[in-house]
Image 1 (cartoon, rainbow, N blue to C red):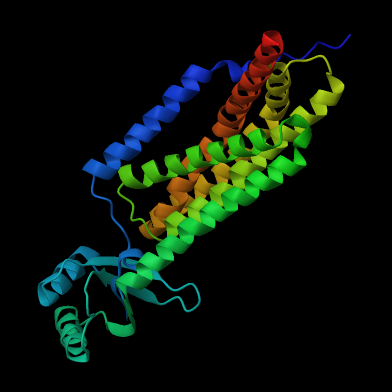
Image 2 (image 1 turned 135 degrees about the vertical axis):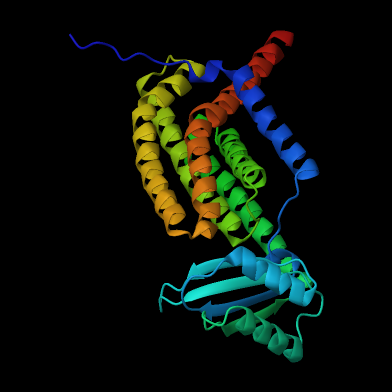
Length: 316
Protein backbone atom coordinates (compact mmCIF):
# COMPACT_ATOMS: atom_id res chain seq x y z
CA UNK A 1 0.00 0.00 0.00
CA UNK A 2 1.52 3.34 -1.13
CA UNK A 3 2.06 6.04 1.44
CA UNK A 4 -0.12 9.11 0.90
CA UNK A 5 1.91 12.22 0.11
CA UNK A 6 1.83 14.92 2.76
CA UNK A 7 0.04 18.11 1.72
CA UNK A 8 1.76 21.28 2.94
CA UNK A 9 -0.24 24.28 4.08
CA UNK A 10 1.11 26.90 1.64
CA UNK A 11 -1.99 29.08 1.91
CA UNK A 12 -1.99 29.22 5.71
CA UNK A 13 0.85 31.74 5.89
CA UNK A 14 -1.15 34.84 4.93
CA UNK A 15 0.24 37.02 7.74
CA UNK A 16 3.84 35.98 7.06
CA UNK A 17 3.42 36.62 3.32
CA UNK A 18 1.98 40.05 4.12
CA UNK A 19 4.86 40.88 6.47
CA UNK A 20 7.49 39.87 3.90
CA UNK A 21 5.77 41.95 1.21
CA UNK A 22 5.55 44.93 3.60
CA UNK A 23 9.27 44.63 4.38
CA UNK A 24 10.17 44.86 0.69
CA UNK A 25 7.79 47.79 0.14
CA UNK A 26 9.36 49.60 3.11
CA UNK A 27 12.86 48.76 1.84
CA UNK A 28 11.98 50.15 -1.60
CA UNK A 29 10.66 53.39 -0.08
CA UNK A 30 13.66 53.82 2.24
CA UNK A 31 16.10 52.97 -0.55
CA UNK A 32 14.47 55.45 -2.92
CA UNK A 33 14.32 58.30 -0.40
CA UNK A 34 17.61 57.82 1.48
CA UNK A 35 20.03 56.01 -0.83
CA UNK A 36 21.12 57.72 -4.02
CA UNK A 37 19.56 55.91 -7.01
CA UNK A 38 22.03 55.74 -9.85
CA UNK A 39 20.11 56.21 -13.11
CA UNK A 40 21.96 55.46 -16.36
CA UNK A 41 22.64 58.03 -19.06
CA UNK A 42 20.30 56.17 -21.44
CA UNK A 43 17.41 57.12 -19.14
CA UNK A 44 18.35 60.61 -17.90
CA UNK A 45 20.34 61.88 -20.89
CA UNK A 46 24.03 62.74 -21.29
CA UNK A 47 27.10 61.67 -23.24
CA UNK A 48 28.61 58.20 -23.68
CA UNK A 49 32.12 57.92 -25.14
CA UNK A 50 33.86 54.62 -25.93
CA UNK A 51 37.65 54.30 -26.27
CA UNK A 52 39.75 51.28 -27.22
CA UNK A 53 43.08 50.69 -25.49
CA UNK A 54 45.97 48.23 -25.16
CA UNK A 55 47.51 46.65 -22.07
CA UNK A 56 46.28 47.21 -18.53
CA UNK A 57 44.81 50.45 -17.23
CA UNK A 58 43.50 51.72 -13.89
CA UNK A 59 39.89 52.83 -14.45
CA UNK A 60 39.89 54.90 -11.24
CA UNK A 61 42.90 56.84 -12.50
CA UNK A 62 41.26 57.34 -15.92
CA UNK A 63 38.06 58.51 -14.21
CA UNK A 64 39.98 61.15 -12.23
CA UNK A 65 41.90 62.29 -15.32
CA UNK A 66 38.75 62.74 -17.41
CA UNK A 67 36.84 64.35 -14.55
CA UNK A 68 39.62 66.89 -13.98
CA UNK A 69 39.90 67.59 -17.70
CA UNK A 70 36.18 68.16 -18.26
CA UNK A 71 35.30 69.58 -14.86
CA UNK A 72 32.44 67.08 -14.66
CA UNK A 73 31.57 64.02 -12.60
CA UNK A 74 32.12 61.02 -14.88
CA UNK A 75 31.84 57.24 -14.75
CA UNK A 76 34.35 54.93 -16.37
CA UNK A 77 33.85 51.24 -17.02
CA UNK A 78 36.21 48.72 -18.63
CA UNK A 79 35.12 45.90 -20.91
CA UNK A 80 35.99 43.86 -23.94
CA UNK A 81 34.32 43.60 -27.33
CA UNK A 82 32.86 40.12 -27.86
CA UNK A 83 33.26 40.40 -31.64
CA UNK A 84 36.79 41.84 -31.94
CA UNK A 85 38.27 41.08 -28.53
CA UNK A 86 39.43 44.70 -28.20
CA UNK A 87 39.61 46.21 -24.74
CA UNK A 88 37.45 49.27 -24.32
CA UNK A 89 36.67 52.04 -21.85
CA UNK A 90 33.15 53.45 -21.60
CA UNK A 91 32.95 56.99 -20.25
CA UNK A 92 29.54 58.44 -19.34
CA UNK A 93 28.50 61.74 -17.83
CA UNK A 94 25.49 64.03 -17.66
CA UNK A 95 25.64 67.10 -19.88
CA UNK A 96 23.05 69.20 -21.68
CA UNK A 97 24.88 69.95 -24.93
CA UNK A 98 27.41 67.13 -25.20
CA UNK A 99 31.07 67.71 -26.09
CA UNK A 100 32.26 69.87 -28.96
CA UNK A 101 34.84 68.49 -31.42
CA UNK A 102 37.50 70.71 -29.82
CA UNK A 103 36.75 69.39 -26.32
CA UNK A 104 36.85 65.84 -27.68
CA UNK A 105 40.29 66.49 -29.22
CA UNK A 106 41.59 68.09 -26.02
CA UNK A 107 40.40 65.12 -23.95
CA UNK A 108 41.95 62.66 -26.40
CA UNK A 109 45.25 64.54 -26.19
CA UNK A 110 45.14 64.53 -22.37
CA UNK A 111 44.50 60.78 -22.25
CA UNK A 112 47.35 59.96 -24.64
CA UNK A 113 49.75 62.18 -22.70
CA UNK A 114 48.75 60.62 -19.37
CA UNK A 115 48.69 57.01 -20.65
CA UNK A 116 51.19 56.93 -23.56
CA UNK A 117 51.67 53.13 -23.43
CA UNK A 118 47.97 52.25 -23.73
CA UNK A 119 47.35 53.51 -27.28
CA UNK A 120 43.94 54.99 -26.35
CA UNK A 121 41.77 55.61 -29.43
CA UNK A 122 38.32 57.13 -29.77
CA UNK A 123 35.89 54.41 -30.92
CA UNK A 124 32.45 56.00 -30.56
CA UNK A 125 30.71 59.03 -29.05
CA UNK A 126 26.97 59.46 -28.52
CA UNK A 127 24.85 62.19 -27.00
CA UNK A 128 21.58 61.05 -25.43
CA UNK A 129 18.89 63.70 -25.26
CA UNK A 130 17.19 63.82 -21.82
CA UNK A 131 13.80 63.78 -23.55
CA UNK A 132 14.77 60.67 -25.51
CA UNK A 133 15.96 58.98 -22.33
CA UNK A 134 12.69 59.73 -20.53
CA UNK A 135 10.68 58.51 -23.53
CA UNK A 136 12.67 55.26 -23.55
CA UNK A 137 12.04 54.75 -19.83
CA UNK A 138 8.31 55.48 -20.23
CA UNK A 139 8.11 53.01 -23.13
CA UNK A 140 9.72 50.34 -20.94
CA UNK A 141 7.16 50.98 -18.17
CA UNK A 142 4.30 50.89 -20.69
CA UNK A 143 5.65 47.59 -22.05
CA UNK A 144 5.61 46.07 -18.54
CA UNK A 145 2.05 47.32 -17.89
CA UNK A 146 0.85 46.05 -21.28
CA UNK A 147 2.47 42.66 -20.64
CA UNK A 148 0.75 42.51 -17.24
CA UNK A 149 -2.66 43.18 -18.81
CA UNK A 150 -2.06 40.48 -21.41
CA UNK A 151 -1.09 38.03 -18.65
CA UNK A 152 -4.29 38.81 -16.73
CA UNK A 153 -6.37 38.26 -19.87
CA UNK A 154 -4.55 35.02 -20.78
CA UNK A 155 -4.77 33.51 -17.29
CA UNK A 156 -8.42 34.61 -16.92
CA UNK A 157 -9.37 32.79 -20.14
CA UNK A 158 -7.20 29.70 -19.69
CA UNK A 159 -8.17 29.12 -16.06
CA UNK A 160 -11.82 30.12 -16.21
CA UNK A 161 -12.78 26.96 -14.30
CA UNK A 162 -10.82 28.01 -11.21
CA UNK A 163 -11.79 31.64 -10.96
CA UNK A 164 -10.36 33.17 -14.14
CA UNK A 165 -9.97 36.87 -13.38
CA UNK A 166 -8.90 36.44 -9.72
CA UNK A 167 -6.25 33.96 -10.86
CA UNK A 168 -4.95 36.44 -13.44
CA UNK A 169 -4.87 39.41 -11.06
CA UNK A 170 -3.17 37.38 -8.30
CA UNK A 171 -0.53 36.07 -10.72
CA UNK A 172 0.33 39.66 -11.73
CA UNK A 173 0.39 40.70 -8.04
CA UNK A 174 3.03 38.00 -7.52
CA UNK A 175 4.94 39.37 -10.53
CA UNK A 176 5.01 42.87 -9.06
CA UNK A 177 6.27 41.35 -5.79
CA UNK A 178 9.20 39.87 -7.75
CA UNK A 179 9.86 43.13 -9.59
CA UNK A 180 9.94 44.91 -6.22
CA UNK A 181 12.57 42.44 -5.00
CA UNK A 182 14.67 43.12 -8.12
CA UNK A 183 14.35 46.90 -7.63
CA UNK A 184 15.37 46.65 -3.95
CA UNK A 185 18.39 44.53 -4.97
CA UNK A 186 19.50 47.16 -7.49
CA UNK A 187 19.07 50.02 -5.02
CA UNK A 188 20.74 48.45 -1.97
CA UNK A 189 23.67 46.98 -3.91
CA UNK A 190 24.26 50.31 -5.62
CA UNK A 191 23.75 49.02 -9.15
CA UNK A 192 22.96 51.51 -11.90
CA UNK A 193 19.37 51.55 -13.17
CA UNK A 194 20.17 50.84 -16.81
CA UNK A 195 19.29 48.48 -19.66
CA UNK A 196 20.34 45.54 -17.45
CA UNK A 197 17.55 46.52 -15.06
CA UNK A 198 14.94 46.31 -17.83
CA UNK A 199 16.44 43.01 -19.08
CA UNK A 200 16.15 41.46 -15.60
CA UNK A 201 12.58 42.77 -15.24
CA UNK A 202 11.48 41.20 -18.54
CA UNK A 203 13.29 37.92 -17.76
CA UNK A 204 11.63 37.64 -14.34
CA UNK A 205 8.21 38.40 -15.89
CA UNK A 206 8.50 35.29 -18.06
CA UNK A 207 10.07 33.05 -15.41
CA UNK A 208 7.68 33.90 -12.58
CA UNK A 209 4.47 33.64 -14.60
CA UNK A 210 5.58 30.24 -15.94
CA UNK A 211 5.91 28.91 -12.37
CA UNK A 212 2.49 30.29 -11.43
CA UNK A 213 0.80 28.81 -14.52
CA UNK A 214 2.22 25.36 -13.69
CA UNK A 215 0.62 25.58 -10.22
CA UNK A 216 -2.72 26.80 -11.64
CA UNK A 217 -2.65 23.84 -14.03
CA UNK A 218 -2.29 21.49 -11.06
CA UNK A 219 -5.15 23.20 -9.23
CA UNK A 220 -7.39 22.89 -12.29
CA UNK A 221 -6.57 19.18 -12.60
CA UNK A 222 -7.19 18.64 -8.88
CA UNK A 223 -10.60 20.26 -9.15
CA UNK A 224 -11.68 17.40 -11.41
CA UNK A 225 -9.93 14.74 -9.33
CA UNK A 226 -11.03 16.16 -5.95
CA UNK A 227 -14.58 17.50 -6.54
CA UNK A 228 -15.38 17.74 -2.81
CA UNK A 229 -12.17 19.56 -1.86
CA UNK A 230 -12.27 23.19 -0.74
CA UNK A 231 -10.46 25.98 -2.58
CA UNK A 232 -7.72 26.01 0.06
CA UNK A 233 -7.25 22.23 -0.17
CA UNK A 234 -7.02 22.40 -3.96
CA UNK A 235 -4.40 25.18 -3.79
CA UNK A 236 -2.30 23.43 -1.13
CA UNK A 237 -2.40 20.18 -3.10
CA UNK A 238 -1.39 21.97 -6.31
CA UNK A 239 1.52 23.76 -4.63
CA UNK A 240 2.71 20.55 -2.96
CA UNK A 241 2.65 18.70 -6.29
CA UNK A 242 4.61 21.51 -7.97
CA UNK A 243 7.11 21.98 -5.14
CA UNK A 244 9.74 19.47 -6.35
CA UNK A 245 9.60 20.76 -9.91
CA UNK A 246 9.85 24.37 -8.74
CA UNK A 247 12.87 23.64 -6.51
CA UNK A 248 14.69 21.70 -9.23
CA UNK A 249 14.10 24.36 -11.89
CA UNK A 250 15.17 27.16 -9.55
CA UNK A 251 18.32 25.36 -8.36
CA UNK A 252 19.34 24.55 -11.93
CA UNK A 253 18.88 28.14 -13.09
CA UNK A 254 20.46 29.57 -9.95
CA UNK A 255 23.47 27.28 -10.36
CA UNK A 256 24.00 28.56 -13.88
CA UNK A 257 23.67 32.21 -12.84
CA UNK A 258 26.02 31.72 -9.87
CA UNK A 259 28.67 30.28 -12.19
CA UNK A 260 28.16 33.22 -14.57
CA UNK A 261 28.46 35.70 -11.67
CA UNK A 262 31.68 34.10 -10.41
CA UNK A 263 33.24 34.03 -13.90
CA UNK A 264 32.19 37.63 -14.54
CA UNK A 265 33.60 38.80 -11.20
CA UNK A 266 36.86 36.89 -11.69
CA UNK A 267 37.25 38.28 -15.22
CA UNK A 268 36.78 41.84 -14.03
CA UNK A 269 33.64 42.54 -16.11
CA UNK A 270 31.75 43.79 -13.09
CA UNK A 271 29.18 45.63 -15.23
CA UNK A 272 27.52 42.27 -15.93
CA UNK A 273 27.01 41.70 -12.20
CA UNK A 274 24.17 44.24 -12.34
CA UNK A 275 22.37 41.66 -14.49
CA UNK A 276 23.31 38.34 -12.89
CA UNK A 277 23.00 39.24 -9.18
CA UNK A 278 19.52 40.90 -9.35
CA UNK A 279 18.40 38.05 -11.63
CA UNK A 280 19.40 35.54 -8.92
CA UNK A 281 17.33 37.52 -6.38
CA UNK A 282 14.41 37.64 -8.82
CA UNK A 283 14.58 33.88 -9.50
CA UNK A 284 14.45 33.08 -5.78
CA UNK A 285 11.56 35.52 -5.34
CA UNK A 286 9.76 34.02 -8.35
CA UNK A 287 9.90 30.52 -6.88
CA UNK A 288 8.65 31.84 -3.53
CA UNK A 289 5.88 34.09 -4.91
CA UNK A 290 4.41 31.43 -7.21
CA UNK A 291 4.03 29.03 -4.26
CA UNK A 292 3.00 31.50 -1.56
CA UNK A 293 1.97 34.93 -2.85
CA UNK A 294 -0.20 34.19 -5.90
CA UNK A 295 -1.95 31.15 -4.40
CA UNK A 296 -2.48 32.78 -0.98
CA UNK A 297 -4.05 35.85 -2.60
CA UNK A 298 -6.13 33.68 -4.95
CA UNK A 299 -7.48 31.55 -2.10
CA UNK A 300 -8.25 34.63 0.04
CA UNK A 301 -10.09 36.26 -2.88
CA UNK A 302 -12.26 33.21 -3.69
CA UNK A 303 -12.96 32.39 -0.04
CA UNK A 304 -14.13 35.96 0.54
CA UNK A 305 -16.27 35.72 -2.59
CA UNK A 306 -17.86 32.48 -1.37
CA UNK A 307 -18.43 33.97 2.08
CA UNK A 308 -20.25 36.97 0.58
CA UNK A 309 -22.35 34.66 -1.56
CA UNK A 310 -23.28 32.54 1.48
CA UNK A 311 -24.18 35.65 3.51
CA UNK A 312 -26.30 36.93 0.64
CA UNK A 313 -28.25 33.66 0.53
CA UNK A 314 -28.84 33.75 4.31
CA UNK A 315 -30.17 37.31 4.16
CA UNK A 316 -32.73 36.21 1.59
